[in-house]
Length: 282
Image (tube, rainbow, N blue to C red):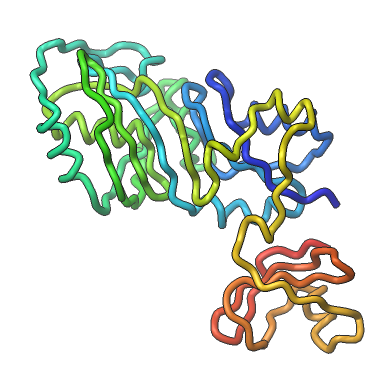
């Protein structure tokens, strides 16, 4: 089966689902998943997996993400970005680069961050943006996040550009609201680009046009994870257990990729001697 990972450079105006649908048509593969939603306004790294590899989605979604973003000061919108309806304008702000840098330093750490109403996060089986569009009131959930790095890149006029390295579950629009609140101003996200997710960088990503031309790289498990490769045959005592996805009691550590005749069979993760199935590929 055609199992692989591909790193897409999402363009502005596309939803993550739009990208998956386009890939499905281009590659003629029905089962494709992505590992972290990007808003239509956002661009950059969108990691996608096909067929059996979609079982790796939770693993890769958990990777840290790195972004370049711009804050537009002086306005507040319902979507927390420049595409939304303006709710408030306030042009009287007086900031310095030193003030912004001090605020960034103070925000490094762990937080409970409120999920924005215009997001794909589900509450009671319905996406939050569906509540927003229907004018329904819903209690916004919070997610545990870690802000690992915040770097000021530029500040001029009403625009603040910065780089952020954050954990899973961090919404940059929400982070920007925290930044603005600490600065005593209002502002929204004007642009966002994901430049890295785990070890997947923007330099390794492909726009859909390149994929259409067949000019892209299909990554396999050995390209994605640090694994020990073990070849097995039907004569091995562990063969049936591996084929059936049973737990294994073997002296390995970390990820082990079992192969038969050069073909991937199953990926296991070993904690001490116990091996738990990650994905079965056969």
